[in-house]
Image (cartoon, rainbow, N blue to C red; front, top):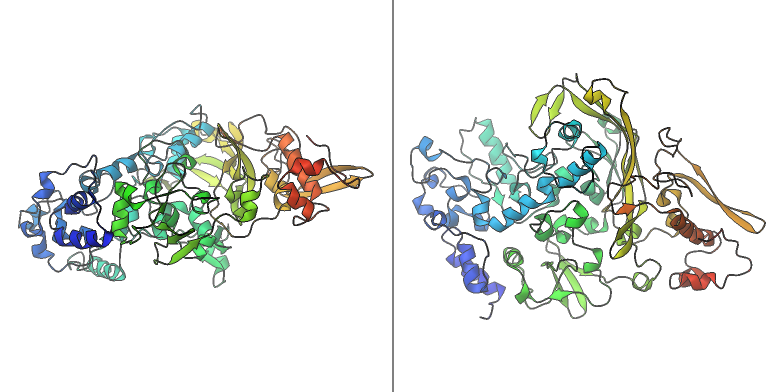
Length: 632
């Protein structure tokens, strides 16, 4: 049957939503598509607002989102309990005060949203598989960093205790046990980690309720809806690669809060970490949220197990900033999940093509084409942003066609070096992040320095070929395993120098200049320092002087990835990924060959512009005055 317009559906939906899950019934009737896997049971059909005793006491409660209003779905569908009992104790028996945690989501949110729940339970945000696998691999407890694990199944080996002490806080299975809005200290909470929203009135009302000893019943209920904001992401994603803080333009420091008191351009987080102001991501500057790009299909997962986050993330910059003709689908071809988002967001572009992601075909429902132009509707404020296609230089540049957008368009990234991990078995202040309990003894992480710079470059190798991507120090650290295994620190120390692929989320319109890649030692993996091109008579030679002292463990500069034009750290484990590596010596020479050209020729000169199209042709027609190092 012909699909009705979104405006008609909206009107009909509001009129007919009386019973729990009636939204789905209306969708089935008017959208004419099946909801696969959804079990509509009598539990929902029998529950109506008038049948429940809850509203006898909570009659004037407000603040509910439109589709979670007890007028339509009752209270029991979310909070359980017995809605047929009028005695307080009996009606509250089995009640869930904070529904949506993964421990109860099967009985609460998952009854109406089983597909979403099944995908969430398989997602990396729930399993933390990549984090566990890499840590166990480094400790020698796994043969590969690509094994699959679940954070909630770990025990108390050296690596698992390391995870419990330093990493196991950020996963969706972590319980939200206290009332209140999501903030920068929030971790986990299952469905409500993303979908819980407190209005200012709800926050005030909650404070009064707690102040009264939980006797003054709240009148304003928090909303559960699809209006996810960046605060929902911040608690977990301001750790590790610090995507959230990067995106907002903040870099971590080792400063104490007292050192920056009353100083502008500094920020002290709720966990007392001190950040300094940097350039924000251009998307953040334009009021775009994380979910403007990373839609529900990515955030909640697709039901498949992945080893690492870059496998789960399907979106590419080129999906919006396309080259040539963009990939689109009509509104009539949207999947069930996307249709519901379209409905809840009250979008009206059902008559326009919608952009889709190339890797897996999922639609970006907040985008559309109008003529030959693409537009994005900001989920924060509804502002319409015109999406620009790739610039001419990007689309015609043969030399950089296998270079990721982030490699050139990232303004900066974090780098952490000099990390030492030792187990203090007598530390009385230990805390198990997974079990949420105080313990005696914990792994302690000592960090030497936080740095910021352009990211280094690494090589991703796959069946499709090579891709050059940003990289940062993932683990330049020593592990004192003897301190854990036998309590004798210093007897069994292992050193690891591994870089990790990185998506900095510090995107800017301008690109880093050519020298910052082709003649910069940090970009090439040598570490910070001075890289100079010395010409003697008719020969040229690159000379590198590192900024940091050599580490006694491997004789490389403290912040380096690989040796300067030698085999150091080339033929060993040097990455947190098995398909990601530093430049080989031949690739270093190739990069520096271009760097030598840039010593005389500006990147905007005709000869360097021609080199972007055919570098070999430029080499074949060298001026007699050109003095280059040996080519590969």
